[in-house]
Image 1 (cartoon, rainbow, N blue to C red):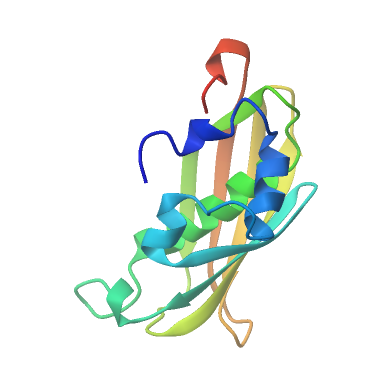
Image 2 (spheres, rainbow, N blue to C red; image 1 turned 30 degrees about the vertical axis):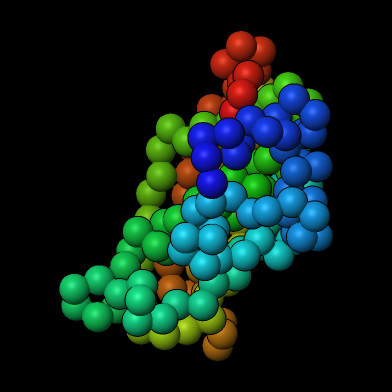
Length: 156
């Protein structure tokens, strides 16, 4: 993909509309989803779910799933949870991301379920639980976002 990817639809779709078209396979997922291999499966007002199959190709030097991959799938879920609430002309950017890891993963089907905890006009705080197929809690992440409007949101 080229640099044009995010801006191609930015002037014609809301973030929420874009999310629904990606889920329906009517638009391609963002390049990071293809690179890592995760899939957005649900986004409703203030919540979102991402699925991911962890394999040995995602391992760190110790052989377990790299923590950055867990951060990526949770970050995507939280971005879509917030994005599902944004009107036309608004976007967001992460200003803080925190991760607590509870259980190592080698190969597993992971689900990242994100939800808005508190949203104001300019900031949003979200949480995301990452669980394996047996529903074991692998990690809990939180994210603080700045909500962008006007010139700050243009092209994002």
